[in-house]
Image 1: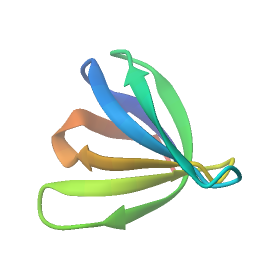
Image 2: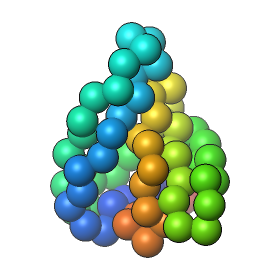
Image 3: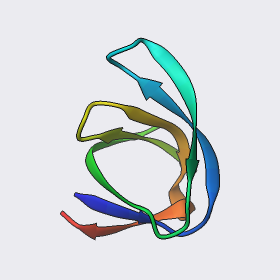
Length: 68
């Protein structure tokens, strides 16, 4: 599915192929292809991207789904 971010954000990205966590700056209206959304609690999710990298602790209100 595709998601679009609704605001600028500083997040952490787990680079699974390198076993490292890198800082990632997300711009408003950036579109990402997401493979899976992992719920952490009622406010945050992890977004598993199509390349298997993971955006960590993303607020639910910071993005919208474009299509599944």
